[in-house]
Amino acid sequence: MPRRERAVEEFKVSELPDFTGGTDPKAYLEWERQIDRMFEFKNLDDEQCCKYVILKLRNGASLWYESFKTRRVRAGKAKITSWHVLKLKLRKRYVPTTHRLTTYRKITDLTQGRLSVLEYINKFENLPLMEDLVEDEDIRMARFLRGLNLNIAHVVELHNYSDFDTLCSMCLKVETQGKTKVTTTYGENGRNWKNENNSRASATGNTTEPKTISASSSAIKPPAAKENSYTQIRCFKCQGFGHFKNACPNQRTITLREAVECRDELF
Image (cartoon, rainbow, N blue to C red; front, side, top):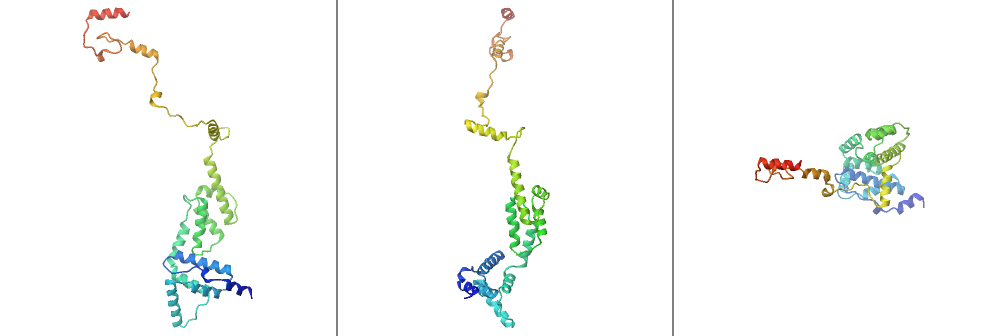
């Protein structure tokens, strides 16, 4: 038995995903890509692919195909036997032109922003796949650099790159080097003194964080000399110690003679 016929016999219709129609163009395009991968793996011809696809149309998609086939019969047109032709008809029905224009706008306006380089690359490559867009390699690289953050794009533009894969590798390397420089701090002698101090502190069980001082322990006591000078303050009203006349708690008024005697005792 020829190899192609043996591959067709081993193929099961249940292995293919169903398509039920709907209004989501992304769902149809994803189903179409899955179908094409299966056909490529099984090595089927275009006519066989068309027959299998018709069997996998369900619900709304099946009703659309029956109506489409009836209109072709009434118009005197031949039956569709090519998967390539049927694919175009399905796209026209389930992928509106507005979706294609929206995808073009998303591709044009795509920028890196807060995305990492890897996330930006994945998003950059997935958008054209949604519409099977094919563009020149140079235009593709120019569009990629236009949406890249300037701190990475300016460094990459100083180097030579010949294809898109090399450009992506350079961008990933520049991003990694930039993160390393930001997270590393160096002392005057060029060594990472901050990490050294942390490692020494962890080895001895001590931390480099400053200790918090309570309000009671941080209170500074006045020197003894100041305490003695404070106790030598004498009130001119009651001749007592430790306060002035305006803050005197004693209501007694002394005579001039008593004040003179108190002064003589001091000197």
